[in-house]
Length: 316
Ligand SMILES: Nc1nc2c(ncn2[C@@H]2O[C@H](COP(=O)(O)OP(=O)(O)O)[C@@H](O)[C@H]2O)c(=O)[nH]1
Ligand SMILES: [Mg+2]
Image 1 (spheres, helix red, strand yellow):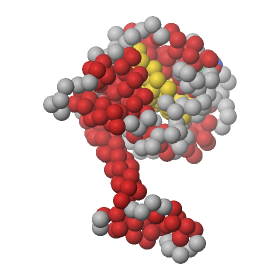
Image 2 (cartoon, rainbow, N blue to C red; image 1 turned 180 degrees about the vertical axis):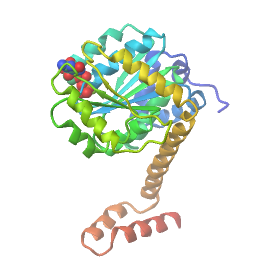
Image 3 (cartoon, rainbow, N blue to C red; image 1 turned 90 degrees about the vertical axis):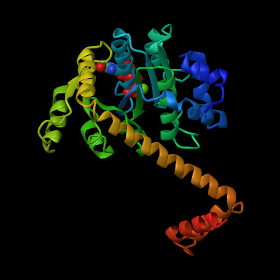
Image 4 (tube, helix red, strand yellow; image 1 turned 120 degrees about the horizontal axis):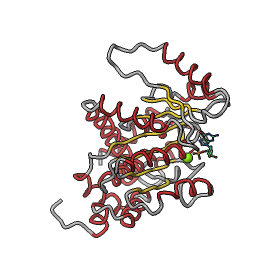
């Protein structure tokens, strides 16, 4: 604080897409410059509304996100999209369809779309995604949409801590069971049955409703609606957008609480990450590997090994 901002930070604040792209790369690569950017720009965050979209691969999440982007642009809102989805990246990836689909926003400077790799994040996927969302927030995006595949702890966690969580399911392929197993039913603020042009959409909606009926809701609390969409044509998307608006309005006072949970997650993850880095720095090289060997050989249990390493690393 107090020091003049470097050109990248200034560019991000001005909403310059090239500066934003550069900044996100620095953050994604876990560089000191990226950390510095997040530090400097934190004071400029807290405005964006985070929409988490999750569901199985191929459910039509990216297509739906594209449609939601159109809705948001219709209200002249600026949109940032982070797709944490290796199976259908928006840009630079293998799936041409996605590039074409999101291509309609290519000339629109108010829309910024970025695919994130799910591997290679030293500090964890959730941290990287949180930092990228923060950069988009600082860049003045009103809406930040985070798309993740609804498998894996990190992915689910990312969406759970968004301001609103949308779970997308599709008819067929035993998705009901799949979703219940993955534990993504609990995180949904809004359910979307996409590909409603296919057989089985009503049955899926009923299965979700039956599942929700097992839960008790205090009077006046939000019951997740179940909306049917055809993302390819846009059918049902205005209703979904309206539902997001209703959720937002109803939870305006709770948004700060959700943000706090998100901040706490980020803090805890950072501390865990940095503490491990500290530990590896202060202990003799190979000490962690030796502990793993001893655990494998049943010479020591993992709890005692962890306690020992922590003890030794803090004694220095
Ligand atoms: N029939 C039908 N196909 C859809 C619908 N939404 C998406 N798709 C198609 O499903 C495929 C996967 O879509 P995509 O958005 O990449 O799914 P994602 O992996 O969840 O992001 C693409 O070929 C889409 O065109 C829909 O509502 N109906
Ligand atoms: Mg996708």
